[in-house]
Length: 212
Image (cartoon, rainbow, N blue to C red; front, side):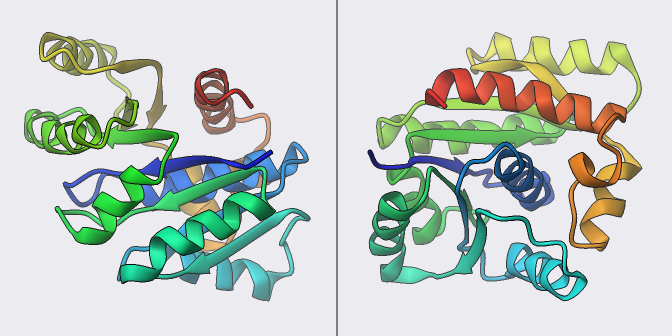
């Protein structure tokens, strides 16, 4: 049985794609899945995070991270499908060829969006790309400040535009950034913390859609 492919995409930069990719990869690996994370962003932030992780000696069983770009993306995704249980693709921002290929190769596209009008407006471009490639997509509110009214306002704005918004959201928590600096994830550094609980909720919704 081939792996499921989750592509994290957002044409607006700064949405937190790489952080979500790393956090989800570690959390699912900790559950016993063989996870392959693929960095196709020219900045290579996910690969750099993994290099820090390797140097710190905290690499769990079942997690690999690689980097590839250009015309090699489809063949690499196909290879990883045969070798892993789950492939997580961290795609570049903007309408790059690699981003389109990553969406086309996915079983599900996760679109993180910060709760601001500019971010919400930019999200439509990514969803249009997913529709064009006939790939289902979900929008998750990410880096949300601790203001409930802002969450509801952003959710309402997304729903008014018929965007598929997830029930859960990810807060703007120091724990995420702190764990990334150490090459780790919140399920390792603060497994009982609020950040880990939010990540678990996100994983539950994604798993239901992916059939994990």
